[in-house]
Structures are given as structure tokens and as C-alpha cells.
Image (cartoon, rainbow, N blue to C red):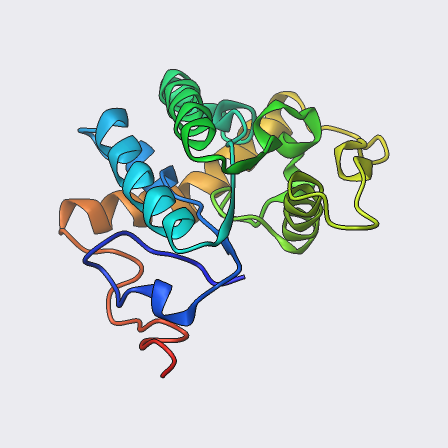
Length: 198
């Protein structure tokens, strides 16, 4: 499923003539000091409209509560809620399928996330793929992706605080440093497919 990036940032993926496209955007915007949900929704409107007008079926997803993944991210909870509301409304206007990962408790299980707590890990990608498959009614898909993982011992007290400090030192600190210096972790990287197919 070709990914469609924001207009102006990369060549137009419609030239690939996809019959199915995934559009997942907004998480990085949530982290910006001047987050504008209406602006993000405007980008979605443009992408959904362009892809569906070109004849592609489109699927997107809603995001889980980041505060349940990163306790320090509690101030972002209302942003996630607003973004999800706009994603659902924009998708409905364009007939875009929505994988409801934002409404499933399993989506906030730390075992689905990588060490940085911002990107899905292997198990998380597996669940997301299953959610997208169900959203587009792929034969053989079902809601098994919503099932909780086996119970585990959750760190509490001092151990939990130490885990948070280690995470902040390894990921939050470097992220803040990049922001202060106007850099991104994506600087210097190129797209997997930097140009459209002929």
C-alpha cells in the first residue's frame, strides 16, 4: 500500500496509480508547540480528496491515548482527542475507512511500542496491519487484533520512576535538543522510493 505524504514534501504518489492507499498523519504535529488540528485536517482533506478522486480506496487510522503510553505526555491527551475527531469526520466525508486503533485498550500496551514510545514496534505493526485489514474488509481479517496480550507484571514505585528517567534521558532529552536547534531525526534521510514509477 503506497504511503501518501503531505503535499509539497515529496513527489505525487498518485502517479503510482494505487488501488489502495494508507494515509497516516498528524502524530508529529501533535508534538509541535503550535499544533493546529484544523490545519492537519486540511491536509487530510486534500490527500483524501485527491486519492479518492483518482479512484483509490483509502484507509487511515485513529491514534491511541499517548498519555497511557508516555505518562509525561498527559498534556497532549486533548490534542489526540481533537485530532481523532477530525480524522473521523474528514474520513466520513470522503468515504475513507478508519482503523479504530484509538478506541482499543490493547493499542496502549507498551509491548506494542518501540523503546522510544513514539513508533510502533514489530508487534505493534502487526496489530496495526490487522486493524487496517479489518477496516477495508480484507478476506480473512477479523477483530483478533483487539485482544489483550497476556498479563504481565507492571513496574511500580521506584522501578517505574527509574524506567521513566531512563526513557527521558535516552529519548526525550535528545528530542528536545533537536527541537531547540531546529533539527529533525529525519534530516539527511531520503525516501525509500524518492520518485514515482514511470
